[in-house]
Length: 272
Image (spheres, rainbow, N blue to C red):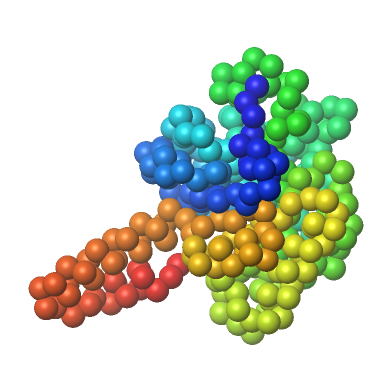
């Protein structure tokens, strides 16, 4: 059975650098995983990725040393079990708002008697070893996303859920959930009330003995989050990295030949 490298990083007292995949391409996944991330997450919620593409992406990334995770579209047992059977090493589930939903999430990730996951790890047996069923519950990671006002109100009960490894903060939805449309949407929050909420979630998770992850739009903000004590930080995603690199390359060319910067180049550098 594989050893989950995220758990090994945590055991060594180190934060996990997580990559994020929104493009349904095994080649893009292979390139990203080869860059040295500790973990890479396939986004089946907001990314242009379906279950079949996710399976091919997991295959393409197998040669890397990264933990391969997936954000599922919703709290649905079929989606969760299918992506685990395909070989994902961890699940991030969006919009977990109550302890009851957190308990359901854990039950879908864990085999009986802890949970209700059905046994049929068709690809995982080949990717992780014939003894997969004996060790999966110990190695698979289970994250509940905290991103609404309701979830924050129920936070202490959510983080106390047995079998939950951590919470993962979606700062864009969290900002909408706490403040409505008072602020712009997006990552890398600087508003004091939102930063206070993010740090409150972090501290509450740690007080319960579980981990906390944060989605970030830049390496600089991810570094700040590690300084706060976050255990896992996502650093941008494949879409933003591609757009940013392409936009900067084109802008550098325009400058070198004395042309003005294009509107498209500014947009690509400005964010996602």
